[in-house]
Image 1 (cartoon, rainbow, N blue to C red):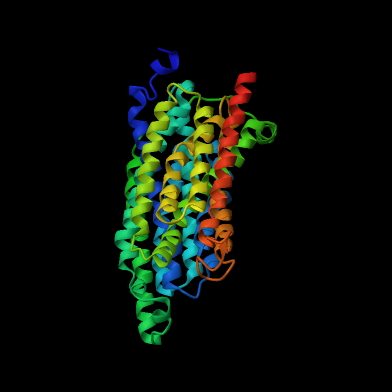
Image 2 (image 1 turned 90 degrees about the horizontal axis):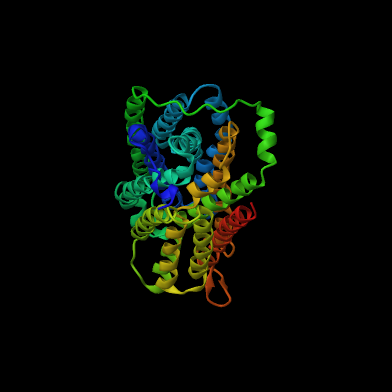
Length: 441
């Protein structure tokens, strides 16, 4: 048995703090996957929005990560990880409660601001929790430990998906009408439907805000252990060291591609299914397949964590990245249900990417890891920029999903998944290159 295999991923004395911090991974998973279906939901409630405008839900949500990651890193560098967690949870709750006035004013831009505030809070949580998990134990098992903690993120994601389906999508009155019938409603009836549906959308976020406050109260009274003190360096030295680290810079690019692919696959599966229902005479529910994708994602995370006990994490990342690209290609080229199943299967290969890239990129760092963590969280902005590009592909021929047939049979919605395929190739290449560097070393 190798020394790495015999080293515990989490020691007994650090188990309780590990569990407390790991709960945060599930908490931001709920917000992420409660929000993904909202692109489709807002498009139904507000049909005047184009696909591109509706996709701004994701842009507002993920731009908060980019905006707040560096301030969060500077904050925890000056104060403490616990302070960063409490501030992050506070912003999370404020953004969630802002959904109440947003629904009251029926203002789409107000909803976008609310989502942005939520992710400013999530940025604090991710900038804090990821490096804290890496530090809670032996350095040799740091990447495995982060994969283990991140394995609970899909549990929150599944919860968010189920909440979105049961309490939002299935309760939208606007979904009971065809687009033509909905636009033909009288002004009073249309106003009543819109008021109902926007309240339906806002309620889960308000309830989530209450849950966040409860968890924050628990954390306030929980003692978070201090992490090992690294030698302090100036901020300019930290940036200089990071910009000279090609392994780290490659990790930032790979992280942006990783997050972008996740958000695109889990957001536009709804449009993919809508097109299948319309063109193949099917009657399937997109959320069921999104839940299946998340179960595969969770399964892949556990499998990947196990594989890393025996295999180089970079090798696992490369294999998962290139295989994910093949599955994404299948979602473009394969017709009907085969394409949908191929799209769902991408999730198992995306599963280990975020924490593995994180661990590889920050490996052997000292004090600059806090600022380095911010760069990797800022890379989540890939989830803000890439969905609008995919939505623009959907709008190439009009507001529908099958206005143009590429190569005679590929609709726009299928072609749009060329973006996740490219992202998977970027991640796989990063994994491959980091294997090569270790061999040279």
